[in-house]
Image (cartoon, rainbow, N blue to C red; front, side):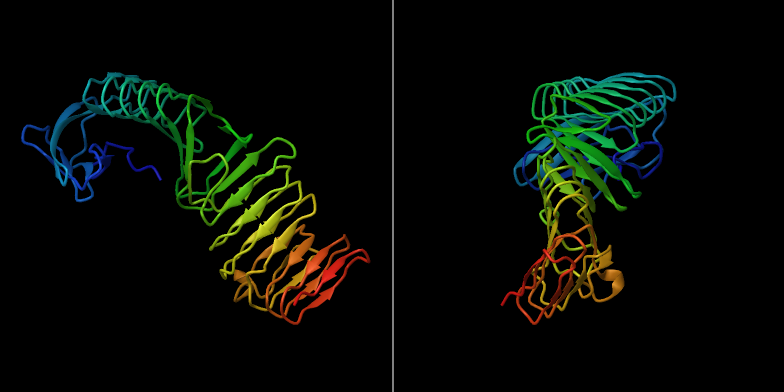
Length: 369
């Protein structure tokens, strides 16, 4: 969810004070700072009153920690509801454009810059900046330094130029269901609807809701999806993604605890499943696709003739997995029942007293130990 977003109400979090080198620092505001702000126990800068639209506030911050002490200055610049031109300085700026088509320049310092509503142009300048264009189509420049660009699905179509330094696009979720479409060629990740220039990393944290990443991949290019780690190809870090859809290619999916939807589309895909008593859905689609339940010790029942529950994969039907367009099964160590479809299947029972029924005379049946 958006946290460092709206300065218009008392209690709003303006920024996390990650100003220091590594160490356990506590931050305070010194006398002489503009009234209406405080530092809470989580080292977040908060507004204690509603900041005045069109105002500029100067905060003198003192930090004490295991590595010593230091002082810094933060300037909070709050634009008007019209189109603004906001210019920062060499200190750390926190700038809000509010409504209107704004132009914001952070200049020096490690700035936090928000365009909010309107078609905004934001330049971080020197320093390690956090830039969020907000709603509408924005043009964002990181400048020098390791910059972070924040984007929420539906905010608009942005042009993002990281400039010098190691820059990152952060895909941020909301409490609703979020969905992003990305293209991955094995070297570079592109986000549909965004133009990325000199942005070296992409991370995703989609927060609440049932959230999806859909891959567009060159024909025949398979990828490895690990929901447990979690790792997704092309992303620097991954959190709160429940559904992944790939494209044509032989993909390998590793299930994780919790409910997921994993869709391999075309290609010969493999789904490695964990025992978690949570309802997953595995869609093989086109190709010869396999589910691997070898890690299960419960008694399982598979019927590949139609989309069906895997009886025994959960304690109840509501917590059991569903298979769709799956051709091959590897079961676990329980006493399993496997029924093939009209197509050609490879059915492997594993350990236990299994009952395996072919649906086609060309099926390969293996009972295991």
